[in-house]
Image (cartoon, rainbow, N blue to C red; front, side):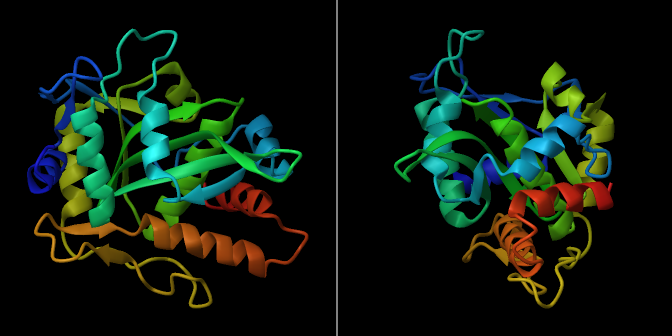
Length: 259
């Protein structure tokens, strides 16, 4: 397992680990020449994705199945022969999750018998006002996009400044991601870490109150970005909006109004 303080230092320096295959005991550190970011005020919510949100096809949660999300992200895919998420890297992120630095968003589908199955999600590392998205997966159309909608809304609620997507893909570009130089990325990363963290924009009636930042217990790696608190605040606000406003409808409206 990678030392947690070393791993957080790497993220704060604009570097992240990868492996050549699932069972590879070694890791290599990546600093891309070009970096993909998703500007939080530039997220593209298409009409079709907004409809999917409003229909409430998926139940969305935060940090309820972190290991399951990692397993799904690490599973073989048709376009990839090997996963870069090795068992060592997975154990390292699970440790970061326990320390409050790594988070997952999950999408669930409810079956006719009332049970639910995990059909999409994402995970990443959060600190100060930055969130570094690591990977996402989807077993149903739009499931990973819905998870990303909730992440973007939570980051806005938490007062975040930077959503790092690492490498550009057509999928991310369609959602508003842009490609910048590593030099520009490091500038934005430094800005997201500088000074006191912005207070959460959550209203006093929200579940998170003014929680803004969740400190990892005694962890010298620094303060964690309060994604779970912001997520809970959004759920609370959706519930207070009345029965006519489902969580999905609330998020679609929130993203539209704050774009």
